[in-house]
Image (tube, rainbow, N blue to C red; front, side):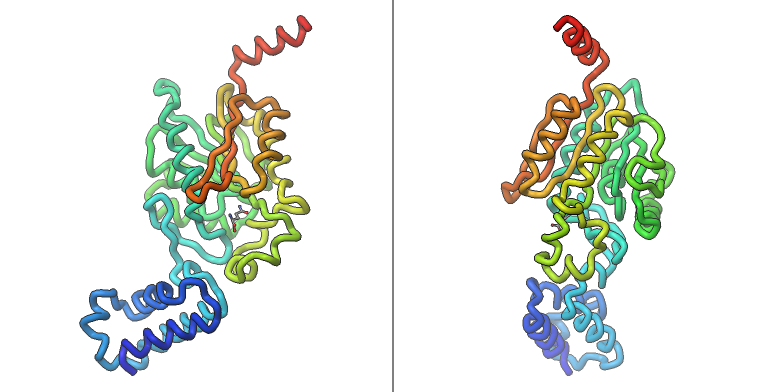
Length: 299
Ligand code: GLN
């Protein structure tokens, strides 16, 4: 078969299987499996493809047809312009989450110079994409990435090594704060936040192939926010901030939890699609806290 015929086969096979980006995925897999870039394809499209070499391409297209995400087949996903290894033990980094990384980066750049290095904690770190992109794109910070999954942490460590950031981070296998020690200037997290009852409605790629423990936010999807928001003040330096990714319909609930827990400057950010996507808040500074105590006493 000619390359042109292989590409046409892949495209229609993926379309029949209901893959959302059949055309693009066929291109990516051809490039990945046969080393044929788009430019090379146009030069060689009428050449007979080497059958043996195309066996790998066929196998990948078939796996994509069973709705394995493209990124688990190629093993990588870009996030904040950086390459990350991914596999079925970690959530694939989403473009939506770049909002959190970008805003956290702005926050990091505002941290007082004289107190450097500042410590950043990433809870439910997964592939490590949030923490590692903060480390790669700023200096003066060091980080701790926590995750309950040992296999996820293995992936994060591999990413740290590939990005040459190993000396600036540590990884801890921990159920949220359980094994976390220290005081942080910034805590970031993209915890699991899909309500258990809604998991079945997700796309097959997500529902059947991404790790359930990275998605399942228990009964109402808010389980992890309750736990994180309750404990975060103990681990935040006075004036330190908590940045949380949220689901599009969780703004009110998470905002209220943050306010009830005494966070100041609680703010909500929208993603590029206009959906509420992140809530941030600041642990009150020592002065503010003292003023509050005095007010409370005088009332
Ligand atoms: N935003 C992800 C999704 O829609 C969910 C991420 C999460 O639960 N943290 O699949």
